[in-house]
Length: 243
Ligand SMILES: [Zn+2]
Image 1 (cartoon, protein in one colour):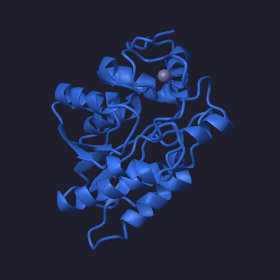
Image 2 (cartoon, helix red, strand yellow):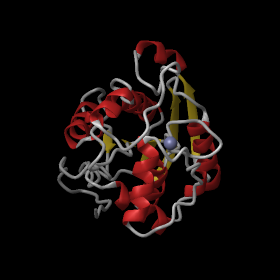
Image 3 (cartoon, helix red, strand yellow):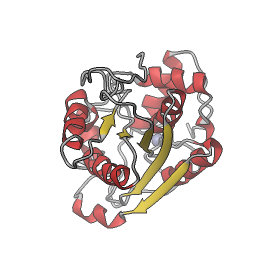
Image 4 (cartoon, helix red, strand yellow):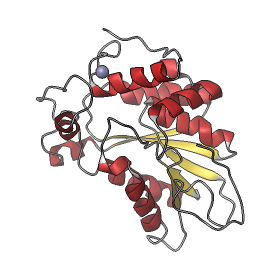
């Protein structure tokens, strides 16, 4: 779990890319969904000494709760936030319950079928690629993703091979090398919950639920995952759940 900002060290790809590129990295774009993982990432990197900007992307997701949460997080954190409207992408993404509003959101703990129903094809690569573009034009050194490990989640674009590959490609797409940092890629969600509480992340304004109700539904895979993460480390999740 430990990560440090280092300068002038050999770069290692097997730790989520946090250790550095042999140069000092100071400015990073965090891909901020509005959920607890990316909100914690923002505070975590700030704690490591990075100057953080946040990027949220409307890719046609089911509801606007996440983007509103991103605004609230950045307001509290006094962080620069850009929100980009790419909602037209949803029509390319086929049948998944996050961008196809006619589909029901599956309930219950993550399973292979619910993973399939909640996979937006290649989402993290698309978001990371856009963030790299902004990082290059905004003279940033890195982008950061809040992807993490977990016993129930099995999204390919949240795993270490993906993190390493995204970092490698961002090193080659321009003359200026951008690092893709995924410091939580080997962490469980409970590790993130613990770190969030340590850092004073405004968890009460984050939004994780796949549904867009007044409060978290408590029944979808991500609600269950989040609740279990807090329970696992004996901490209280400040968001309200319907059930
Ligand atoms: Zn939910």
